Image 1 (cartoon, rainbow, N blue to C red):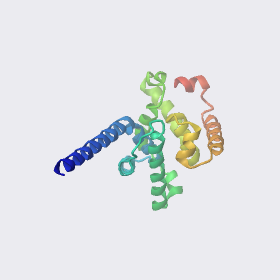
Image 2 (cartoon, one colour; image 1 turned 90 degrees about the horizontal axis):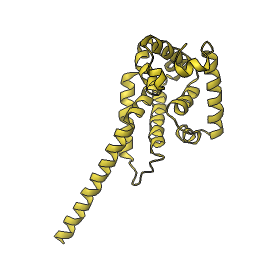
Image 3 (spheres, rainbow, N blue to C red; image 1 turned 180 degrees about the vertical axis):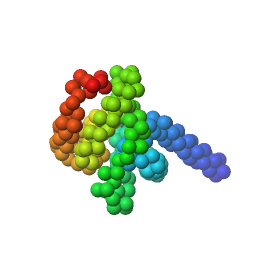
Length: 203
């Protein structure tokens, strides 16, 4: 009987260690992307940190028995997105929040944009980076929240239309049409830049 108890306890410890290892690996793999996404949503360092921590607490609390690695990133981003929606509802400042983007947040957002940019962009001198980063930042600011949300998930985080549909709980057709309108509006805001200049990060 005592040996059976010890065996069960040993199996439980192994299972717990295995789950902890899986969680740690998952955290290391996606922590940067999750924080960048949280900062993109909140535009505030402190709120981004809170959203980041709440996301991983929710992940730990609902950690699945079996991980489907092809879907785990979209699952985590769905948690972040839903927590952000809860934050907006609780604060009841959706409209004013979208207009609060301050110049002092630019440097942090610029770093976030750089993390998804091409090597050609990263190899420019700092003044060119700042000019292009600011132009993109201003253009994104002009988009409605849903448009920005879809655009960042598709073009910067690299999710498929079907994955964005799951993350935002929107029909896939709606995701595609919103993305089309977002790209169209961005092109209008960035019309002073040619496609090649935007690709290379040069005006």
